[in-house]
Length: 308
Image 1 (tube, one colour):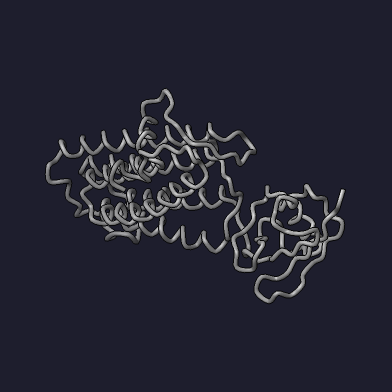
Image 2 (cartoon, rainbow, N blue to C red):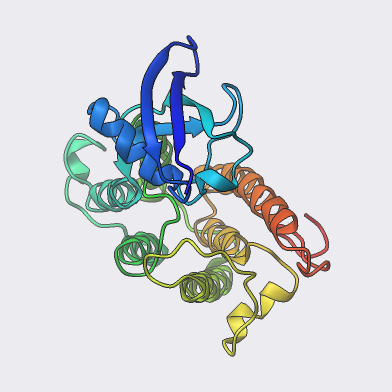
């Protein structure tokens, strides 16, 4: 059996970083990263991007050396992805912040509003309902992160956590300030509007959870297998007939319900910004499905049936 010689160059400078001799033909990129790590301990495997071309895309850890378009002397390029942090840690940090911040405004801790309002409660029941819904949403996210989600990528760049936390924490504080403000006024159409919004919010929360369970069941533990998601016996998953990313569809519906419930401009703005971001993610996921699966259902749209 022929062995490979692998030369790893810096993608930026083209300088030689490492030479690996007698590499097995069936060695994966993940195994090559581990070999590279032994000679350069500061660049642990999840921090490495290994490519066929200096400006090309990163190879997958499961890619096998002998299946790549290289000769028995292979030249690969390395790029440092920077310090990494686990996705679980990222999500727990992102979601714990809004939960705690909102509760600080809800309980009106000192230095937020005027001193006479410290630790007072709102006279409007919708304010208490909004707090329960907001807390439920982020508690659900935290529990899903711990017990439901399976991540195809174990880590992300550490620098991203600051950007993500600024987004989630900042919006949570902005919304909470106005909803829990002593001068807050309830929605124009009163109880009827609030009840309709609550039904919408809870319906979409259940739908979002159902989709996350369906997606989890597609991927066995420890596997990176990708399959086409299809509707299950759960009626909340039937939206898969028309949408590639119904978890985002339900997420949008939840925040629309929360906007209707609170009739608060910062919430509406958060919903719009979130919709644009989720649309970008959904379109990317939809394109990858179409590229990867030739038999992908043609009727599906990325996030909104027949529209977007």
